[in-house]
Image (cartoon, rainbow, N blue to C red):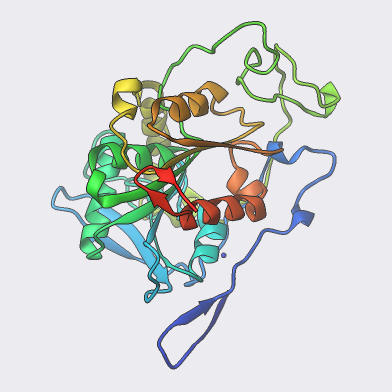
Length: 327
């Protein structure tokens, strides 16, 4: 659920991309970083993209750049709900040095117009992603997804097994409404099932939760500023919220169909998705790994891009024999 430097071209035709990492000075020491949502930023190709016109009439904005000659599997990066691809600028610009990256703005969101369809569904998001990589003549991708993008990545792994090499699923939920497990543990008994710690609590996690004074950065990449249908932004938000209330509804029988290497990743202070969701993904997906990122929340990829990118690249470079890693 939901809710970036280009160097001159060389004679070989390759572009060298310098990763851009968010500066720690953006954080206010009086506000825990898991309560801070840093801004999205520019992609290393200058945000240049194009539209894929589907036969259904839906238009999808996408872009692809990076090391086109790399032997590494191309990486499809999928953003969070109601957002856009620039949320993943740190990851895209970093990975583009060593492999090809593909990003798409989810239908009706970001630069993809909210037109010619009536409702949001994760299965449609997955079909759209396949349409994009088909259009680019890419046979197989690794997926790095955040929130709704992570859910879409899992959907892809379930339904397009031959096209997905591996999935790094950050901040995904697999049940739209799942009971919190347990009542005696101070973490899973908190509002989110995560470490609900803030300044006023002295850093301790508490069972009843509280009202965080969350601080959001000034954002340049908003629906109003980049959507070709800005008058539909309100309707888009409502449509995505309807999606969140009803999908997904995956249990063990669905997760067991995932046959590729998968990591279930979450921030230890994620208050948007309950911890039991990350646990269920790791428990029900065959041989899945689990990674809980320290001192970050749902927006870990922007709150601590250095550590996030390290873990992401480690996973992407890890050798697997089927779904089991080997060295």
